Length: 164
Image 1 (cartoon, rainbow, N blue to C red):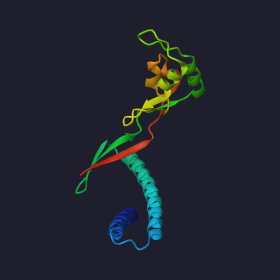
Image 2 (image 1 turned 45 degrees about the vertical axis):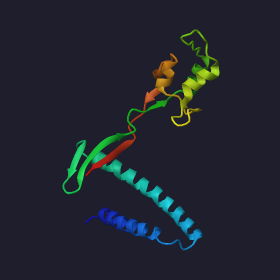
Image 3 (image 1 turned 90 degrees about the vertical axis):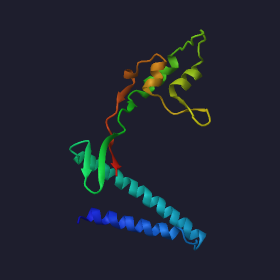
Image 4 (image 1 turned 60 degrees about the horizontal axis):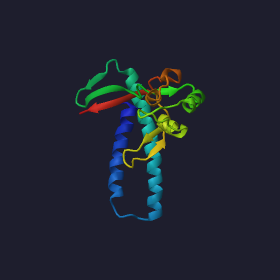
C-alpha cells in the first residue's frame, strides 16, 4: 500500500477522533481557542494539499471521466475556465473615464455613474453597489471593445468531482 493512501487513511482516523474530542466538555477556554487556531492552520494546509493532488490527478487522467471500482466515478473539469484578465488597466480606466453614456431617455450619465457601471456589482442580499472590478461584459455594455483590454486567462488547474 502506498504512503499516500496510508497517510489519507490515518488522516481520516485522526479527524474522526477529533470529532469525538470536540463534543466532550471543554477543558479550558484558552486551550479550546488554541485548538481552533491549530484546526484553521490544518484546514489551510489540507486545502493546499488537495489542490495539488487534484491538479496532478487531473493531468494524469486520460479521459474526462474515470471509474474506480468500489469507490466511485470521478469527473475532471477545468478550474477557472473562461476567465478573463485585464491586460491594460490604465488604458481601461482612461477609456471608462472618457466614455459618455446616453440613456434611452437622452440623459448623459455623470462620470461617476459610468465608473460604477464598469467596475461595480450589486449585492444580491442588500442591493448595495460596490466596486468589484471591470469585466468584458460590463465594459461592452458601455460601448467599449473588451478585446482591447482583456485576454482569455489560461486554465488554472483541474477540479475533480466524485460521484459515489
